[in-house]
View (cartoon, rainbow, N blue to C red):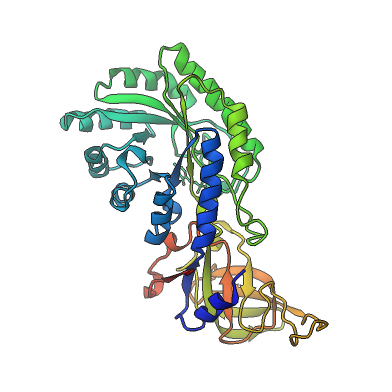
Length: 399
Ligand SMILES: *Cc1c(COP(=O)(O)O)cnc(C)c1O
């Protein structure tokens, strides 16, 4: 939902652009922090979801840590001012250069994803005369019940150490004199909307924690990753997810040992709803079977629909339209809503997959109309590309 002032501002900005509602982001962060603090949970923001500087600054100020998946993300997190003691670094393919940069910063933990990486990290830390803190990322073989392209916690996925490797892993950690083994880490997938999945994860975490405990390791950190989903169908009614419900599950089902810290890595649930991609209709093609709205934004600005058949709510927000997508013939109270037309809403890129939504019901739309693609704050702007030598995308912020 955009207020009239915001809509007025949109008229003069060159499209396409990302619009960030920073008030909504702030409210979301407050809700998350309040719910997490209740249980003394630690939350790291998964930076890959959105690394727009304005967004990062608000998240830093809310007191969250940073979860990074590349050396540059680690560097950026430190530059923005996330304390090094709140930065974690995961990734199946950390290069030596990336590891060395993170070692220099003395980050909170490396989330190590293979036995081989334990050896390499141990060597690189030793060469610097440092002792690196590590958590091992374990693949718990829990099905996240989400789209297969964003599932990460099954044995068929490349991420983490499998459970049958745990003995070898424990052995490697014992011999790694330059590493301090602080805990276990999990991240099973993204856009998880069935909270029962997190119960299953808790059961696995307890099992593995116990396994280590029986072998004489006492783990300081249980990091359960992120993955909490948002409601792409109701960006206004369900703008903030229930962090309370989410954290309560972990409070109830994780068997926390005395002194143990519980860490989370949330991305999407924090930033998805505060962002929209705003675009203009360039052309309308009316066909016999299909009508097309051709926008000035495409997969180069927002790739999720093309990459994982993701749904985004699409609205015509031009003046005279109600934001709900129904145009009144005039402002009189009894005016009938105009009939809706079905459009395939597509971008300008030379790929047939460059389509934001098929058979989208919208009021009759014209060249120049503003179109909002909602819930685009996570995995949107960060995936923008230069394909077709596109311009790159601007950002506009709520005032
Ligand atoms: C992407 C990622 C996250 C965040 O996932 P969301 O679904 O955005 O919450 C957390 N941890 C790791 C290791 C990740 O790669």
